[in-house]
Length: 240
Image 1: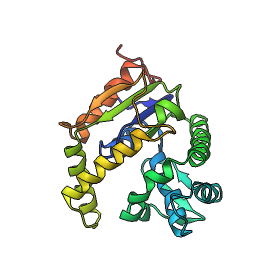
Image 2: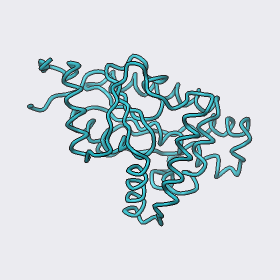
Image 3: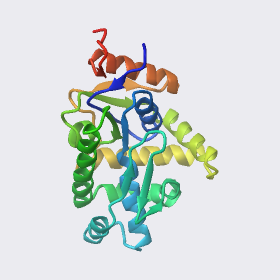
Image 4: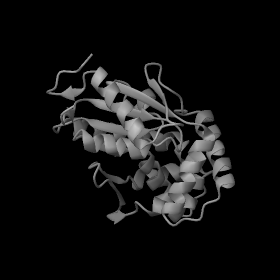
Protein backbone atom coordinates (compact mmCIF):
# COMPACT_ATOMS: atom_id res chain seq x y z
CA UNK A 1 0.00 0.00 0.00
CA UNK A 2 1.26 3.50 -0.83
CA UNK A 3 1.90 5.89 2.04
CA UNK A 4 -1.30 7.19 3.58
CA UNK A 5 -2.21 9.33 6.54
CA UNK A 6 -4.36 8.22 9.43
CA UNK A 7 -7.64 9.90 10.17
CA UNK A 8 -9.31 9.67 13.54
CA UNK A 9 -8.13 7.98 16.73
CA UNK A 10 -6.49 4.59 17.16
CA UNK A 11 -6.62 3.48 20.82
CA UNK A 12 -4.10 0.87 21.93
CA UNK A 13 -4.62 -0.63 25.38
CA UNK A 14 -3.14 -3.54 27.26
CA UNK A 15 -0.92 -4.54 30.16
CA UNK A 16 2.77 -3.81 30.55
CA UNK A 17 5.14 -5.52 28.14
CA UNK A 18 2.77 -6.10 25.24
CA UNK A 19 4.72 -3.73 23.02
CA UNK A 20 2.22 -0.86 23.10
CA UNK A 21 4.73 1.96 23.19
CA UNK A 22 6.97 0.58 20.46
CA UNK A 23 4.22 -0.27 18.00
CA UNK A 24 2.15 2.83 18.79
CA UNK A 25 5.11 5.08 17.98
CA UNK A 26 5.98 3.19 14.82
CA UNK A 27 2.37 3.10 13.63
CA UNK A 28 1.96 6.82 14.23
CA UNK A 29 5.20 7.60 12.42
CA UNK A 30 4.26 5.41 9.46
CA UNK A 31 0.85 7.08 9.15
CA UNK A 32 1.98 10.69 9.74
CA UNK A 33 -0.09 10.76 12.93
CA UNK A 34 0.44 12.25 16.37
CA UNK A 35 1.39 9.93 19.22
CA UNK A 36 0.38 10.09 22.88
CA UNK A 37 1.88 7.87 25.58
CA UNK A 38 -0.52 8.23 28.49
CA UNK A 39 1.50 5.87 30.65
CA UNK A 40 4.39 8.34 30.54
CA UNK A 41 2.05 10.97 31.98
CA UNK A 42 1.30 8.81 35.02
CA UNK A 43 5.00 8.07 35.39
CA UNK A 44 5.78 11.79 35.27
CA UNK A 45 3.32 12.53 38.06
CA UNK A 46 4.74 9.60 40.03
CA UNK A 47 8.21 11.07 39.71
CA UNK A 48 6.88 14.41 40.97
CA UNK A 49 5.33 12.63 43.96
CA UNK A 50 8.60 10.85 44.76
CA UNK A 51 10.58 14.08 44.45
CA UNK A 52 8.14 15.79 46.80
CA UNK A 53 8.75 12.94 49.27
CA UNK A 54 5.03 12.35 49.53
CA UNK A 55 3.76 8.90 50.52
CA UNK A 56 1.94 7.19 47.65
CA UNK A 57 -0.57 6.02 50.28
CA UNK A 58 -1.57 9.64 51.04
CA UNK A 59 -4.11 10.17 48.28
CA UNK A 60 -4.86 13.80 49.16
CA UNK A 61 -1.18 14.72 49.08
CA UNK A 62 -0.62 12.78 45.86
CA UNK A 63 -3.55 14.58 44.23
CA UNK A 64 -2.15 17.94 45.37
CA UNK A 65 1.19 17.19 43.76
CA UNK A 66 -0.50 16.03 40.56
CA UNK A 67 -2.51 19.25 40.28
CA UNK A 68 0.67 21.31 40.36
CA UNK A 69 2.86 19.01 38.27
CA UNK A 70 1.03 18.20 35.04
CA UNK A 71 3.60 17.02 32.49
CA UNK A 72 4.01 18.58 29.06
CA UNK A 73 3.86 15.94 26.34
CA UNK A 74 5.48 16.10 22.92
CA UNK A 75 3.32 14.18 20.43
CA UNK A 76 5.78 13.79 17.55
CA UNK A 77 6.25 9.99 17.26
CA UNK A 78 9.79 10.48 15.93
CA UNK A 79 10.78 12.44 19.02
CA UNK A 80 8.21 12.04 21.82
CA UNK A 81 9.06 13.99 24.94
CA UNK A 82 7.80 14.37 28.48
CA UNK A 83 8.85 17.32 30.60
CA UNK A 84 8.17 18.68 34.07
CA UNK A 85 8.77 22.39 34.60
CA UNK A 86 10.86 22.42 31.43
CA UNK A 87 13.03 19.44 32.47
CA UNK A 88 13.23 16.44 30.15
CA UNK A 89 12.42 13.45 32.37
CA UNK A 90 11.97 10.84 29.64
CA UNK A 91 14.75 8.61 30.98
CA UNK A 92 14.19 9.08 34.69
CA UNK A 93 10.53 8.02 34.58
CA UNK A 94 11.58 4.56 33.35
CA UNK A 95 13.66 3.85 36.44
CA UNK A 96 12.90 1.26 39.11
CA UNK A 97 11.66 3.78 41.69
CA UNK A 98 8.96 5.15 39.40
CA UNK A 99 8.06 1.70 38.09
CA UNK A 100 7.51 0.46 41.62
CA UNK A 101 5.23 3.36 42.60
CA UNK A 102 3.32 4.22 39.43
CA UNK A 103 0.46 1.75 39.93
CA UNK A 104 -0.38 3.21 43.34
CA UNK A 105 -0.26 6.79 42.05
CA UNK A 106 -2.32 5.84 38.98
CA UNK A 107 -5.03 4.39 41.21
CA UNK A 108 -5.77 7.77 42.84
CA UNK A 109 -9.09 8.99 41.44
CA UNK A 110 -8.13 12.68 41.35
CA UNK A 111 -4.89 11.90 39.51
CA UNK A 112 -6.79 10.00 36.85
CA UNK A 113 -9.36 12.78 36.56
CA UNK A 114 -6.67 15.40 36.01
CA UNK A 115 -4.70 13.37 33.51
CA UNK A 116 -7.72 12.11 31.57
CA UNK A 117 -8.84 15.72 31.08
CA UNK A 118 -5.37 16.60 29.79
CA UNK A 119 -5.25 13.52 27.56
CA UNK A 120 -8.58 14.41 25.99
CA UNK A 121 -7.34 17.95 25.39
CA UNK A 122 -4.23 16.65 23.67
CA UNK A 123 -6.31 14.32 21.50
CA UNK A 124 -8.58 17.20 20.44
CA UNK A 125 -5.51 19.29 19.67
CA UNK A 126 -3.99 16.51 17.57
CA UNK A 127 -7.21 16.00 15.62
CA UNK A 128 -7.18 19.69 14.76
CA UNK A 129 -4.01 19.11 12.73
CA UNK A 130 -3.53 17.00 9.57
CA UNK A 131 -3.41 13.31 10.36
CA UNK A 132 -4.99 11.41 13.24
CA UNK A 133 -3.55 10.27 16.54
CA UNK A 134 -2.41 6.97 18.02
CA UNK A 135 -2.99 6.87 21.78
CA UNK A 136 -1.69 4.13 24.04
CA UNK A 137 -2.33 3.25 27.65
CA UNK A 138 -4.58 1.15 29.88
CA UNK A 139 -7.93 2.94 29.72
CA UNK A 140 -7.97 4.63 26.32
CA UNK A 141 -10.77 2.61 24.75
CA UNK A 142 -12.80 2.37 27.96
CA UNK A 143 -12.40 5.90 29.38
CA UNK A 144 -10.20 8.42 27.57
CA UNK A 145 -11.37 7.97 23.97
CA UNK A 146 -14.55 5.92 24.02
CA UNK A 147 -15.43 7.16 20.51
CA UNK A 148 -12.13 6.06 18.96
CA UNK A 149 -12.59 4.75 15.44
CA UNK A 150 -10.36 1.75 16.20
CA UNK A 151 -9.68 0.16 19.58
CA UNK A 152 -7.11 -2.60 19.90
CA UNK A 153 -6.33 -4.48 23.10
CA UNK A 154 -2.82 -5.96 23.00
CA UNK A 155 -2.11 -9.07 25.05
CA UNK A 156 0.79 -11.47 25.53
CA UNK A 157 1.73 -14.14 28.04
CA UNK A 158 3.20 -12.86 31.28
CA UNK A 159 6.41 -14.74 30.53
CA UNK A 160 6.80 -13.07 27.14
CA UNK A 161 6.08 -9.66 28.63
CA UNK A 162 8.64 -10.18 31.38
CA UNK A 163 11.28 -11.14 28.82
CA UNK A 164 10.56 -8.00 26.82
CA UNK A 165 10.69 -5.79 29.90
CA UNK A 166 13.96 -7.40 30.97
CA UNK A 167 15.46 -6.95 27.51
CA UNK A 168 14.40 -3.28 27.47
CA UNK A 169 15.95 -2.68 30.87
CA UNK A 170 19.20 -4.34 29.83
CA UNK A 171 19.33 -2.36 26.59
CA UNK A 172 18.88 0.85 28.60
CA UNK A 173 21.69 -0.10 30.96
CA UNK A 174 19.40 -0.92 33.88
CA UNK A 175 20.02 -4.00 36.01
CA UNK A 176 17.36 -6.59 35.24
CA UNK A 177 16.52 -10.02 36.63
CA UNK A 178 13.98 -12.06 34.67
CA UNK A 179 12.42 -13.74 37.71
CA UNK A 180 11.88 -10.50 39.60
CA UNK A 181 10.67 -8.77 36.42
CA UNK A 182 8.09 -11.53 35.91
CA UNK A 183 6.90 -11.12 39.49
CA UNK A 184 6.63 -7.36 38.96
CA UNK A 185 4.63 -7.85 35.75
CA UNK A 186 2.17 -10.11 37.57
CA UNK A 187 1.93 -7.67 40.50
CA UNK A 188 1.25 -4.76 38.16
CA UNK A 189 -1.39 -6.76 36.26
CA UNK A 190 -3.24 -7.56 39.49
CA UNK A 191 -3.04 -3.96 40.72
CA UNK A 192 -4.13 -2.37 37.44
CA UNK A 193 -6.96 -4.84 36.84
CA UNK A 194 -8.22 -4.66 40.42
CA UNK A 195 -8.19 -0.93 41.07
CA UNK A 196 -11.53 0.74 41.69
CA UNK A 197 -11.00 3.63 39.25
CA UNK A 198 -10.62 2.87 35.53
CA UNK A 199 -9.42 -0.72 35.93
CA UNK A 200 -7.48 -2.29 33.09
CA UNK A 201 -9.91 -4.15 30.86
CA UNK A 202 -10.71 -4.60 27.20
CA UNK A 203 -13.41 -2.34 25.77
CA UNK A 204 -16.48 -4.20 24.52
CA UNK A 205 -15.86 -2.97 20.96
CA UNK A 206 -12.08 -3.52 20.94
CA UNK A 207 -10.17 -6.03 18.83
CA UNK A 208 -7.91 -8.32 20.85
CA UNK A 209 -4.44 -8.89 19.40
CA UNK A 210 -2.16 -11.46 21.04
CA UNK A 211 1.46 -10.42 20.47
CA UNK A 212 3.13 -13.37 22.22
CA UNK A 213 4.42 -14.93 19.00
CA UNK A 214 4.68 -11.72 16.96
CA UNK A 215 7.65 -9.44 16.47
CA UNK A 216 7.23 -5.67 16.07
CA UNK A 217 6.88 -5.93 12.29
CA UNK A 218 4.19 -8.58 12.67
CA UNK A 219 2.18 -6.49 15.12
CA UNK A 220 2.46 -3.43 12.85
CA UNK A 221 1.22 -5.45 9.90
CA UNK A 222 -1.81 -6.57 11.88
CA UNK A 223 -2.52 -3.01 13.02
CA UNK A 224 -2.26 -1.56 9.52
CA UNK A 225 -4.68 -4.23 8.32
CA UNK A 226 -7.15 -3.20 11.03
CA UNK A 227 -6.74 0.49 10.18
CA UNK A 228 -7.37 -0.28 6.54
CA UNK A 229 -10.41 -2.44 7.33
CA UNK A 230 -11.96 0.45 9.26
CA UNK A 231 -11.37 2.82 6.34
CA UNK A 232 -9.09 5.09 8.38
CA UNK A 233 -6.53 5.91 5.71
CA UNK A 234 -7.24 9.53 4.79
CA UNK A 235 -7.59 10.13 1.09
CA UNK A 236 -7.23 6.44 0.26
CA UNK A 237 -10.06 4.07 -0.49
CA UNK A 238 -9.88 1.13 1.91
CA UNK A 239 -10.00 -2.49 0.81
CA UNK A 240 -13.01 -3.46 2.92
